[in-house]
Length: 266
Image 1 (cartoon, rainbow, N blue to C red):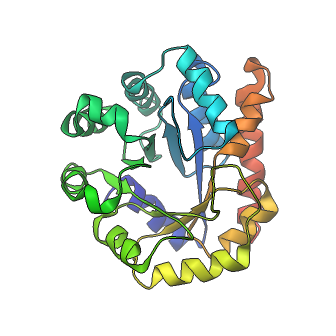
Image 2: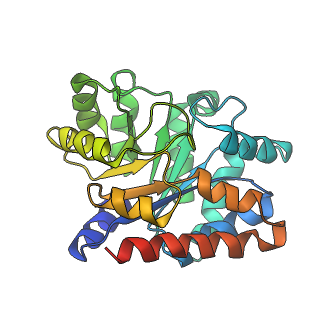
Image 3: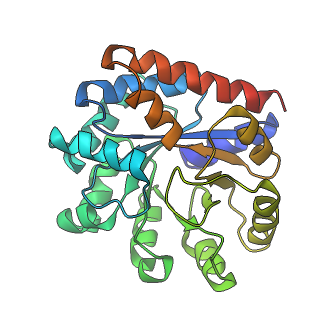
């Protein structure tokens, strides 16, 4: 059983919702990435998504776009991201780490090499925004054969056929994007999320995480009523963006704690 599966199984046994958090590797500076990862766990995060900086992050709103721009000024790339995971694993052997990004950096080094490096570093899976399930069956199989989960996005516009493809090829958990648009945009309609998640569960047996637009404990708690995980990214990046670098770690830990407290108060 993968670290991701173990985490969701343990949380379900305790009747708890997983908190999945996102930061961009290298933002606001490379030296803070690993301390921020540990701060998220200390604040109550159960799964970490570590964004691979990319020059054209098509699914991201302006907040995460700016995070990518800051990281790219330090020339942070995929090799550095593997290094951050390796460093994180020295003190945390248990918390799942999912690499999140786009196809281009993976294609540059090759899918097999990406899998080898991710596994060696201690990552647990990947979300590749522009890898649709119908085009990466072989990649999903190779990931699974190496103990890594390939996690797919589902959206309000996803067809039943797409949901079935995700059920066939996906691993770890399924990530439902609650809004039509980019990260950090709009306000979640929790009633609509409940209907969509119920429809997805008819075909997908994996845990379902919901993200895009969750910004506070109230929204997180409402989403947790229907989802197995709450995913927060842009709001955490804003904490980093609005804090002096020497205070960013403490700010992220404090914010994550407020979300974890809200989830546990259900």
